[in-house]
Image 1 (cartoon, one colour):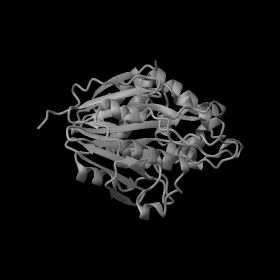
Image 2 (image 1 turned 135 degrees about the vertical axis):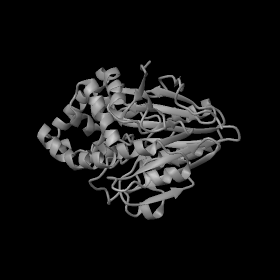
Image 3 (image 1 turned 60 degrees about the horizontal axis):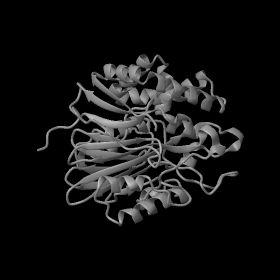
Image 4 (image 1 turned 90 degrees about the horizontal axis):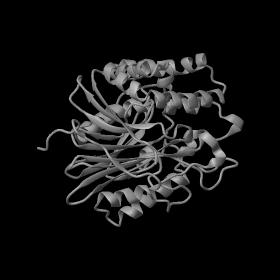
Length: 372
């Protein structure tokens, strides 16, 4: 069974970052060792990495000095270079501009479900799936996080309790990254799925933008936060709020659409945004259709929602994705799966594939405000 760590971080941004860095030092260092190899295989030196990252770091520090301060604290606590930690948080901005070894398909294209690269099977890995379920008695948000297999096991749950703003969050995350998905003290749940479009640009990296969105209080606040000016690119955000409000926001670097959808994978559903987005892949469509099919059975319990995250029924990619051994540490696989029930304020997380690892309930003490 894969170990799941929980870190409680309180105080100002730097103090919270230092606590996370200290408690996850071994995971962060193991993760960065993998990324050293990833960048080295692409011929990227430390100096070149700095040159590539600098404009994104400037944009991030200008708009979110508090989140950058958290990253700096994490770097100090883990005794790693802050720029290397920032590189993982800006991976989705870096990867498209890096050369791939032997002409292989870039990871971001693969994780979004594209299956046309040479020497790749119909089971080509892809990326995240998020959905919400609303019943008469409960509101659920669920998320399956796919990422590089070389980072497998380097995950934790961060309980983030700041003193510089009132919103507290509980978030499963890759060890090097800021929280992006999870639950906040407004009893809001957020799942995030990757998207690419032809207006992607230099700006605030997506992970920092999604950390901002994770603090959303309600639908209007979520819309305002997701439409962040100066963002580098877009995400699909699946929201659920206690009381049954659930919807999806699709963003590009410059546009946004509000959808009354409760399922999202890695292609744009809004027609206008789809016109500038990447072509929908077979994998993304398959997962979207499969979740829609499974939700038609109207799951009403936590276990029913968990079963969807364990599903292998879609082709060419499964929701519960397992790595292809032929692709080594650059294969894609499930990092963690999350289910949250918002009325009761409960969260369960499985580290790795949820068909192999149990969902563990997270202690939410100190995260949630009292019910109205």
